[in-house]
Length: 261
Image (cartoon, rainbow, N blue to C red):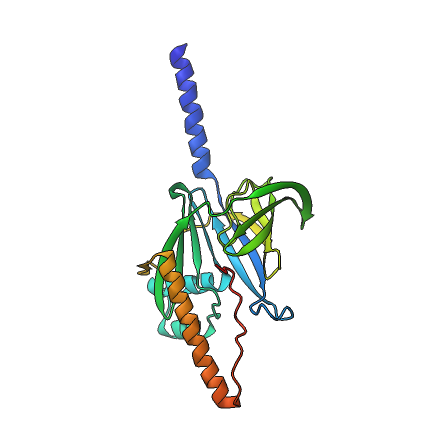
């Protein structure tokens, strides 16, 4: 009887792990509406992002970055002729956001991959960056039965709406840790707003570094300082060029990053 019970337990455990392995991956599509200039609420821009999710990790990147990566992968594999490579390069969409966010669940960390001045950098942050306060308020958003949560991160206060019926504790950008997929998240000034516009189940192959690029490891503080220096130099160059052309100094229109601190 004892051995029969143990056998049943083993069969149940095997079935559980088999189910986990067999679980499909998901692709969530988010639309970001943001305000690049904090002083001009009439100027809004948009960008489409993808969030790929499986049992081990998720990857968040812009739609155009995903398209470019796929094209470069085909080039690396030698699946394109020289003419096709040239045509592909000319038709490649402009990538606004080069940042990729890999959330590595079993390592409890985030891996941030980015490009600056044609150089590749990566740094790490803890997976659970945000302390969420989950409220009782509910709302239906595009057919999703959502619950409200709030948090603060990097100088902004955020409101998130998540669907507890979708057991994926993830969301766009660095947002993570709610008991359900994030359907909408925005800062209280609505300078940055991510909305879920599509969710598909499929067999997506998610790789931390698809193109096997050589990223230089830096700390988050080193990366922030490099970003400050890069933006200051770029702005100074733009002001010089603009003032030479018009005789007036150029006022920056991109002074409102998603992370203020």
